[in-house]
Every structure is written in C-alpha cells, then in structure tokens.
Length: 375
Image 1 (spheres, helix red, strand yellow):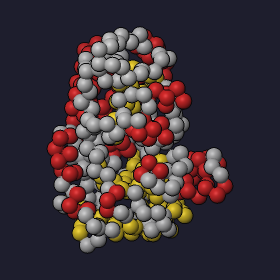
Image 2 (image 1 turned 180 degrees about the horizontal axis):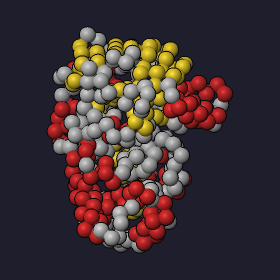
Image 3 (image 1 turned 90 degrees about the vertical axis):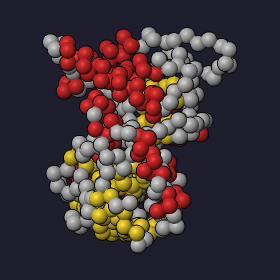
C-alpha cells in the first residue's frame, strides 16, 4: 500500500500515483459478480458503459464533492465496486494530483470497521469517497475522518446500474433547495406518528434540532458527509420513547421483500420480529452481532436507531437500500448502531428497512399521505 498522504505546503509538488490500476483490474477480474462482467465480444457496449461510468464519476467529483486542485483524495472500494472506483479515480485525477485508490476486502455487514491501514489513511485526507458493498457510514473510521476535517461520500451497495441511472441522475442542487425548505416545518415539533395500510402504527419523540438536512448530494465543505445517491432527511429517535408496530414492506438491506416484516417495538427496542425466511436471517445476523458485545449491551443491537424519509424524485425501489431509502414518498427505519447520530447504541451493525406508502405526522402536521409527499 502506498504511504499515507501528508498535508503539503502550497509550493510543494506531488507525484501522481497511477500504478494501482493493474493490480485493481486483476482483483476485479477475480471477484466481480458474473452479472456485472461485460462480454469482450461486444466492445461497443463496453465502451458505452465505460463512457457512462466516467460521466457519472465526473458529476460526483465536480458537482457533489467539488474537488479542488491539490486536495488529498482517498477513494476506497472493494472487489465488487472496482470499476466504479477506477472511474472515480480517473475523474478525480483531472482535478487533483493527490488521488489515492485503495481496494479493501469486502466486508461482512453494514457498519463493520474497515481495516486499520484504510482507517488510518481516511483521517489524513480532505476528501474520502467510499463505494463499497457494505456501508462504512456508521463507523468510527468515518467519524474520525470527519473530525479531522474530511468531507465524505459513502456509496454502500453501489452497482454500475445504480451509478449510471436512477437516483444518481437527479438534480442535487434542486434536492438541496427542497430539503432546506423543510427546516421551518420541523421547528419545535416533537412527536412523530407513522402509519400505513399494512399495520404500521408507531409513535416516538425526537429533538427537532437533531434533524439532518445535509444528505442532499452537495458535500463541498470540511466535516460534511453524504450518501450517494443522495436525497433524504433523517433523525435520531429519542431513546426509550418509541412504541408500536413497524411493518417493513419495501426493502430490508439489499432484499426486495416478498412478504412484509413486522417489528414490535417497546421503549425504543425491537422485542419481536415476524416474517418469512428473511426474519430468520435477521435474527441470526443481529444475534451474531450481539455475541461480540458485553452481555449488558447485547439488547442494544435491536435499538431503533434512525428514522427518515426520501426526497429524491429520480430514485427507484430497486432492492438496493442505498437508493430505496431516498425514493420520494417512502420512509425508513434503521435498526442497530445510533452512535453516529449521538445515541448510546454503539453495536457495529446498522441496517435500514423501507416502508413504501407511509403516512407521517409531525405533531399535528402531516407531511406524507399514503406515499404522497405533501409540503
């Protein structure tokens, strides 16, 4: 691995490190999913995809991150996202001569910490872009990088199709304006009530000052973080206040649900989970996460950690939660780690599920009506 960047004086010159691409291609060829391999027999299709990848990458580099000449840039991918990483590397090198591309091993679940060498590199950068199979958003490594002044874009579950279509094609400047307009609606509203026709009926409290309005795709200042594709607003449910039933009918993590998942919540903790085989997988996954914790903390893996709703009109329900939770008219709940939002559940796993047609009230003000965004 190349040595980490250090911040340099304005008059220093830095060589461009472009020797990683050959090794990266070998890893991609060995591990990229078969459905994403483009046949060499159709060179025109391959060229079209490469061109589209570069165009999308330029939008990320120029519009979303606004990378400037000489900024330290770290792109972190894994073997499933190597082509996207290469496209971002190519586009970033047009803006800065201090761009490093690192391929880390694919993680096991969302919220898992990256390897220590990658985490150490992150905290020495001005920009971190992370298209990876599993989310790095809710990790200590990302939080540390942000505290050190980095601006960060994470892209968990990103595929070539997602990178070049759907939510990534949205006008992020327009989304930013629309999200900014919500601040007056949230002001001084404490109680949230969510219902839908499948049986969702849950209430909880929030601190209205805690709403996050920065996930709009524009990440151009130090200590900012965004998901891409962007377009959601979200908040930490006040711990211990949530009670009721949540029925997830859209997606859970990266699975388009055939049968809804029913979560029974008492005092902010999921105490029962009903559903098909997906429910059994969830119990196993969260059970394994709990075994890594002290016995007194194991219940915290079932914390309802986050609530939010989508604001991206181009996002589609695809089975990739990164885009699904941004779809205008939906809302989502995440279970697990809430420490990045200021909570006390530091459990190393954080997984969201999407409700497709919710009705949502903030105190007496309705903002969603059966999947229709009202403001």
